[in-house]
Length: 309
Image (cartoon, rainbow, N blue to C red):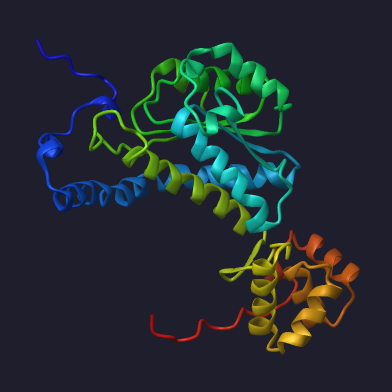
């Protein structure tokens, strides 16, 4: 008798059934063919992802925080996305946080059984002070991770908004705790159950969209330029100066001085330059405009140079 697992991520993939006899090039082609399906599948969830962006933006504007919660690969992807927000957008590390079953040790070494210790989810969310006004996004490739389900239930109890990113339809008891369901059904993996592959790729794409979309809505870009970064190392200082040189049409030396006067904040420097104003006045104008440069400086960013790739 053949048992069919109800979880799509646990089913066998007929297209890769003979992969154990494949050459290295054939393995590459098989994996690449499966990976090419992922972006289109993620696209089917565009409206749900947009709702998550709206919820994240509203959460941030009222002083709330975004929490990703997951186990294994899902948890690591949440921690990764959260950890990239401060250097990319100059956010406080508390603004977007990742919580993984098993704690920090699970980031580098599998913590067997951590995803089944459901009350640990309540303890972990409580330790992070999750409360009303926050936004908790559970990540569970299979849709059935007990730790994630319990975290969402607790988030609902404390009146935090909730969402779930899953690659297989979750059970009703999980859906009951979810405000927004994002469900890219990536199907059976190349290697059965290896959700770090297509499911992991889909999850990373979704998380990228949520935080990037929310940060754009908060005014952390000018066009597609990253303007709310902090020049905390040589690479970011160089990028900051180059942005000011391009946007303000000034020399490297002038860009460096302007950046120093703006406390190392590019968006403040841009407003200071075009309004010919002080740092404090520029910051005040940005605050009144919800952080969006275009509402303060009535001009588009410079056109993209037509440079062959």
